[in-house]
Length: 152
Image (tube, rainbow, N blue to C red; front, side, top):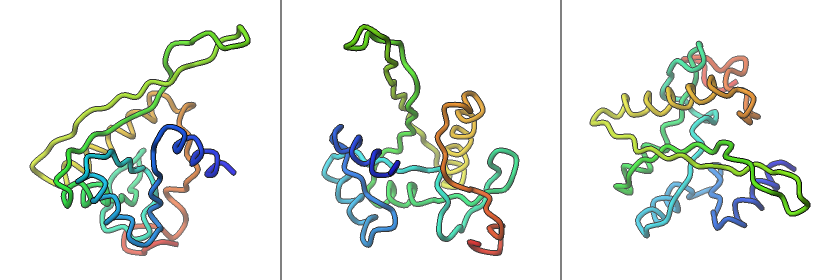
């Protein structure tokens, strides 16, 4: 139900979800970038196949490098974005509701591995700064998913 809720919200904002499990999703993302569209990729997901492992929240974790491969293929800029709480605004019924603020920063590095590390260090920093605001339904360290073992 949560996934359906997120998809409805994203579509209402004009975001077209590209599910990573879908056939041809990388090609669709590259085409969208080349046409000038924005493409968002969740970088804290557990990859099906983890060629790269980096420290994450104190433990080695599988890292998905799809975002780098897509950006390279489309020759697109890599922006890292976080959605967080903004100032409260009056709600229609007189109560208060929180607004969301999106913070974007461009990441650049000549070294691909350094760029991937920078992305995950920033994500980890955001989680540590506001752990109660991080919605995470994934088990990044599921049993049997360790370097050299593949997904468990």
